[in-house]
Length: 387
Image 1: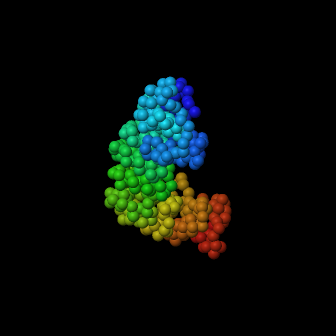
Image 2 (image 1 turned 180 degrees about the horizontal axis):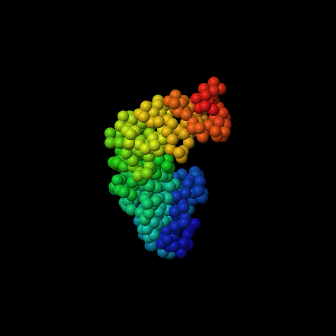
Image 3 (image 1 turned 120 degrees about the horizontal axis):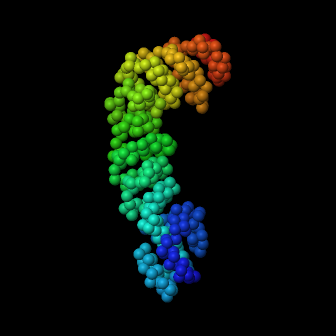
């Protein structure tokens, strides 16, 4: 089968953008038509081999698509030779590989869209295409907008293999462009993958030197004091400080972001309750009650022993005990229920009470009575609450 001269020249000149790029980015199921005459279905390596997409295995004999006596053969031959193909025995598989490579070069050189292609390859986790584009020595530390930086795209979408590929090609990991990468990883990945990405950043020289952007998000991924990043940071932490002018104290922020029992209790010796206003004191206890990472009622007791008033009122929020009752009714499973119940019990044992206003609200009593706890425990807590 011979291709018309016009089709060949147009293909070479334009890179056959639509077909070539789609073949390069598509999954194996989408590329089966390119090898309809072969005995086996193609896989990613058929089009995306490390040898610039050229096939490395000998394929079955296929029709020659162009010959040296065809019109315009000198132009075609020159382009084919540039990509390592021979005009004399060009078959359909080689032609498809050639078109894929040519189209990439068209996008990258003529349209200056290699960054767009790279980000698309990262989003699709197409390792072979990522490797090919990176092999072009392209600069990936510059982008028109923050969301276009390949490292940020990889932080949000890439698997660990492809994330490492991008990190290894970044010239300055500590550029301000990447300041929020840890928070992006926290929001976009499951715990295991997120922790692996953060560890690779740390081992690659990324500096975790900002409490809001680096340390607080890291808390959600670790067992806290077993993590080298946090252990090194712990000695510099003042739990009474604030990173937001009108925000809670740092210890409360850390609890909200995932500090566990061990880390909270490690910081308590430096906690100065006398510096906190009524709202800050209440916020600290509420953060501990609502955090799923605080699971030991002894942590609640330790906070109270530092001088927190379990019956503090600010006139705007429900009582601490009332909030604990609500939280008890919002758990997702039996284990969470038991943990939350123990926290409530720690409050009751420390003298926590509902306000007179809350006791008059029948909906709170009804909410408590709907809890699925043993009757004996319900009666004991019911009596302590004065309901």
